[in-house]
Length: 435
Image (tube, rainbow, N blue to C red; front, top):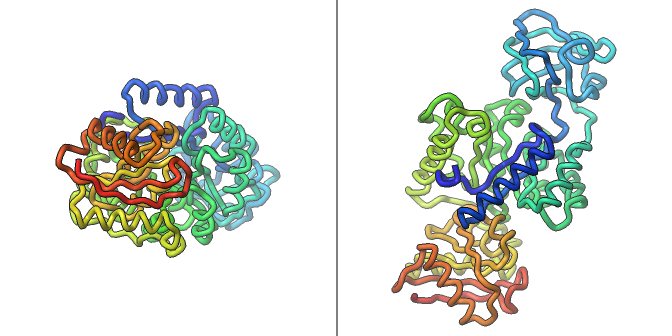
């Protein structure tokens, strides 16, 4: 899958044990060392997601019949949902494939009428779109996941069911400076607070599965586009996820609509597009990655990607102004690449947010920054020694670019850096070099 195009692996902690999650992280690290390329890890928290509990075997429910959810019925992972739900409210199972209406609250169970039937199996998601559940954003299980993420030094934590910036800040209190936090937008309340959430987080994810159940599928494309715009303007990575190539769970080729969906996300300005069940349980995981990569490359091969540009706040700061200037100069002089010498990755993210039509080579001495930048659109991380002096830095950066196959003799390259060197947020230098 890596050879087919994977840059990061998402590990969903809703499934498996902490020991298994740790083993997966180590597997990715070993793979990265063996292939000598940075590979990131996104550890996805389970969140306060209500799920179907353990069933002896899958259960079929039919339209018109009544079933019990909770005690002595179909088990639920969070019994708090029973105490809050009221008759007349809807219950949706398995991303809305099954629909029920609450008829009565009976002790610790909900008696429901089946509106749209199907097969209920263990672990499937249960949504209460009409109910505000009294469940904190960070469950005890999530706190253990955050501790694991910090101990294993993963690049990103995907924070499930984020309601507002306060949830992000609470997670940051546990994590510290790293890992970075990707806020998942999948609740109606999160849609109303997207700008606040992105401001507090390090990036965002359009989690279209639960979001579509929460607000209905017809509004999801608009929310996706708006969230991408918000993240682009703030130079924060944004992921589009769920059902992108769903037919490839059982088919070796995607549908034309799915290819169009991937292309639309890329053209809108997404940094990453994500596969889930296609690679987790699908029959054609490698083919799915290949199809995703080909669809993304085709989308990028046409007209320039139109993005909103950096926010006025970022443009008014020296690094943001230098990023804009670097992209403009690169276009004027016909540069083949923009090399960003960076200690934190910030300059590379600023340049990438402008979607230049040439590669952004992030030259950094820090392996963790190289892995983080594997999420960012158009960025190729290059590990270099922490050299002092403009000339020396230029030479080691060009050498890394040549070895990676992006720079050849006679090419022009634009280089950005900061003086004093290797100090975060000090980008103040632009240089044009002919190799």
